[in-house]
Image 1 (cartoon, one colour):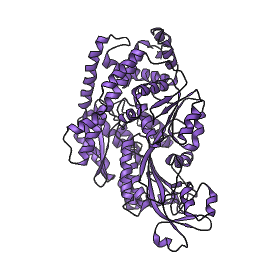
Image 2 (tube, helix red, strand yellow; image 1 turned 135 degrees about the vertical axis):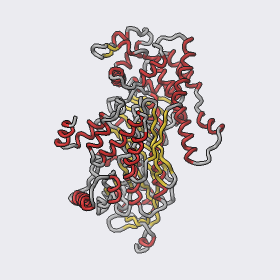
Image 3 (cartoon, helix red, strand yellow; image 1 turned 90 degrees about the vertical axis):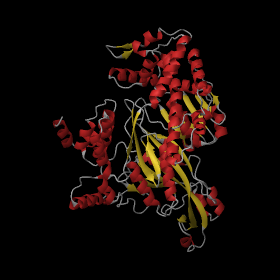
Amino acid sequence: MSKKLHNSLIDYLVAVGCDRDSGLVFKDKQCLNDENFYQIITNPIDPTILSVISGDLANYPASQNKINLNYPPLKLIRDVSFDLGNIEQNAKTKRDHYHRLSNIMSFESPIHADILQNLPQFCFPNKCYASKLYIKPSIHSFVLTDIEGRKKYSIVLIYYREFYCSKNKDNFELLESDEDAEEKRNYFHVYIPTAIILISQFSYFTILKECLSCIYDSLIKTESFQATLENFAFRLTHLPVPPKRFNRFNLILETCLYKEKIISIHPQDEFEYEVFDLSLKFLFNHMSIENIIHVILGCLSESKILFISQDYRILTPVIQCLMKLIQPFKWLLAYVPLLPGPQLGYIEAPHPFIMGYCTDYENLIKQMEEDNEIMIIDLNNDEIISKRKLNNFPDNCTNLLKSKLLSIDLNYVENQKLCRITKTDLYSLERMEESLIRKLNFKICDAFLEFYVNIFGDLTLFIKKQTKKFNKIAYLDTINEKDLPFYKQVIDSSIFGFFINSFIKNITEEKPDLYNHKLKTMKSKLEKKDSKYEKLEYEVLDLINNFEKQITKIFQIPDNCAKIIEEITKDLETTHLLPYKDSLYYLRGFFYISINQIKDGFRDLYQIDSKSLFPKDIIQDYILPTLSPNQIEMFQEQN
């Protein structure tokens, strides 16, 4: 396959660590002079890239055979490429695939070299050591951002593989069996950490964690490390993500990934900038309501914000939850929720940022206390260390938000599970918990969204219809003098500029807009009397009831890729529900494009009736640049 599935759950699977091919490499080269076991387990390892696997290429930089010419297997290629033709054409396709790969003289990777070079630091932010004893596996996450601001969400499994370490003339060899080790004069039994990373354009942290759990369970039960990774990589790079939810229509994609484990992928909400599948309660477990509001103030004021914790695994989930709560605003500046130790110098940047850091915890606090520009959030002690004076939110809006948040039962999920009948199968149990978490998240997000509408009011009154510009001067004239410093502080920021431009564009093009949707629901402006807030409570409850009454369709993704288009086509022929048809055209269109049937793919995508669902940006940014001039001319002729 020469094309990728543009809405696949993951883009790449990467393995980082040391193995038989790479040997045991240390950061301190002097320890190579010693054969002392203590030196082996106390000197930090220098992990390397062991494999990079995409949908159609499996790379092994540390191996002599850097590219596996048998990946993907011919069967899987035939499964996906429905119209490869007769057997002779299939054979020619495979020969062309081999010929292309055999001409690669050096390591070819689908990931940019800079990202690959930094991956080991993000996998092991507190350095990497061999161990005498077995250590239980762990999972953490981080976010990579490219030069153009596109984010790659990554989740990492760290588990320890058993090796026999033997010193030879130049380095330390790693042997996988005791039989091989007995041939050596001296050897040590050690456990070496290996990182398995799933990299995705979608922030499905919980789902990717489930996928990694399946991969780990398979790895510990098989001797074929490479085959296991390739199998899961192919499955996950060809597993589509459902289109955005729209018109209260909810398409859920499910597949049996491993044994009886069902992976259930919920769509992104039509108002969301990015998908979110964590529990917001996690944020409230580590920060008080007062501190959460103050950090949001720092975000809207574009401060330098540094989260610190003695446990680096909580940094990315906490910060991602915070990013969810600032919607409909979007943080567009430097964003590194997990900053590796060697990259601490990034916090000296002159521009605003949001970062998370763990190493040298106590020394860092003392060092940063002298910096007046950085707002430090100590997650272990729920404390904010900041000397920068910020203009606060209007008091009446803040007090109302605190009151609403205090009325929300943050233990809602646990209490509901306690009072309900326990589901007897794992699938039903997981689906029930997912549903409860989404309801809790909705209540929390709705409280914050109402908070923003109360602060900024009906912005449509200040949009110039002729120029489609925001009249900042007229807007500020309506603000009372006490709160004016806050509004000037926020409205001049780039985060507000992006928000108001998106707001104007959405209402002009009649696209879904989160702020405008809430504004219409509340039917209120900035100044409201207290007596009207009782009515708003009922409106919120109506929203929650509507949320529960969504039209939901579950589509089972077949194990065999060849059946996916066939199953989608069958559903298209039988359904009369327009939102469902649009979602199916979306899915089938991307699958056609991934197998080079561009004409069929475009035909499906251009049959999508919903403007909000039509993937204009993906077509412009990713698909059109890969087409030849002749293909583009052909499509233009066919209108």
